[in-house]
Image (cartoon, rainbow, N blue to C red):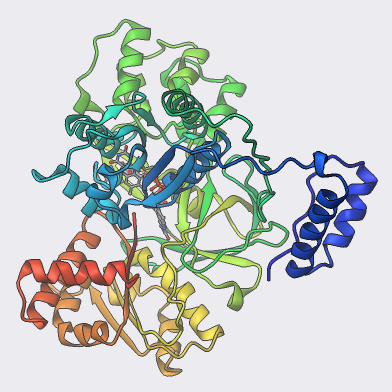
Length: 581
Ligand SMILES: Cc1cc2nc3c(=O)[nH]c(=O)nc-3n(C[C@H](O)[C@H](O)[C@H](O)COP(=O)(O)OP(=O)(O)OC[C@H]3O[C@@H](n4cnc5c(N)ncnc54)[C@H](O)[C@@H]3O)c2cc1C
Ligand SMILES: Cc1cc2nc3c(=O)[nH]c(=O)nc-3n(C[C@H](O)[C@H](O)[C@H](O)COP(=O)(O)O)c2cc1C
């Protein structure tokens, strides 16, 4: 249902008039409001023609295309922010997703702003891959008529920081594009830097394009969007943990937890496919070790900053350079950072920093995301998460994942977790609930599919549901096994295939299962099924992708290129969706 618009308190009325008008507006229909606005404008024009100047001929507004490449939505959000700011400046802005765009279309743009995230190990977001590869290909079009600038999103903890944005920026220049502004490379805390760059870049572009015609005026009203006051990364909701259960068996080599949080009063309205952002705190023992290595043990203010606010679990090349400069020590080679953390660096020159130097060296502690494993239609005002505790040894030291260990070890039922919503409109159940779905979700990748299944059950969806799950051992790691078996019995789950990698001498993963059942998989796809993949991006998603291509080639009796074209068509049809991390 559409809600009635409310006058903002900046409208040229007294407060009591605004309240009275809003009372009336709240009970009007869209037709009534349209009639009223036409009636008032007509009446005014008839009674006092001087007061209403005829509309100025529309100024020719400079076109601006904002092209984004995103995986988890940040670039898309920024593209929308740019569009809004550009419209205010009088541009005719248009937002496009690289998934639906070609280099030829981009080359036809007079003004082009690109917002691109980097994923994997320096890869473009998956849906942007075709655009990216076509732009790098030898037959890419020239951009001689295009002014452009690139905003790159990334994470300094990765060796190939903002690689996608860098490559796109350099490629567009090489193809003849005119750079309007230097590329900006943003770390996880991108909002402030990005806003500054957007403002400056649009101003420069504005100065270079035709000024709007005189006399033309546009009233810009920032309508408050529903959810504008929803919890955010910087203003999260303190959600009470109502359930905290270890799902992995006691003899399992993995450690995965089901965590239910109450969203009552948060205003968070999620859809299956969305993730919840969690604002973690650092391990107090690690914070103490960092302080000790820096020669700053016992500083309570510093301890609070190191546990709650700053990232002490990563190490970037930039930090190594800053550290060498501050301490006068010899710079370490770039690859030294790999698998190490700030603690390792501090130990190379113990006690060498002041508290101010240490905090200046550290970046803000970033949130982590967890797929929501529930449907509100089934669990009400709760969200369920499936969290795999991360522990590993690197350079001889035992290390722990910041957020997963915070949740798994330092939170219990009744405790509070700071959360906010990260919607993923690109990972949704089909609108047609009769469409079959195939869900490939090994490990914690199964989380959103539990949400999908709850939703399909609650809405009485008629489409068939096929889940392909995988993990290490059948006995210890079959996450949500009882629920899955119940759903098989109730026929909500039409089919369940599993791959346990450590049950037999030879490793077996979901991609092997998919290959074994290729005939059925192909038949489901031919019946219009949507194929979903969630979980590990580096190995699993790539192997599953390659296997699906092989299946399309094998079952469709076609070559690799034709299989790729078919999978592209399925993706464009919104039937191949991935949420991988
Ligand atoms: C959209 C999305 C949805 C997600 N959904 C889920 C989910 O449902 N469940 C879930 O558990 N996770 C999920 N994740 C992953 C999750 O956000 C975290 O990345 C994960 O929990 C690890 O975070 P952490 O803070 O515990 O580890 P961090 O402190 O962030 O440590 C992770 C880092 O440790 C390093 N590392 C890890 N293993 C090794 C190793 N063997 N050797 C050397 N270095 C290593 C790597 O640099 C890695 O980046 C999702 C991620 C995204 C983006
Ligand atoms: C699994 C994963 C891999 C990533 N790989 C890189 C990388 O190689 N280089 C980089 O600069 N950033 C990397 N990032 C960080 C993202 O680029 C960053 O979070 C960005 O804001 C995401 O933008 P999006 O929401 O538009 O996809 C990675 C993030 C994740 C979760």
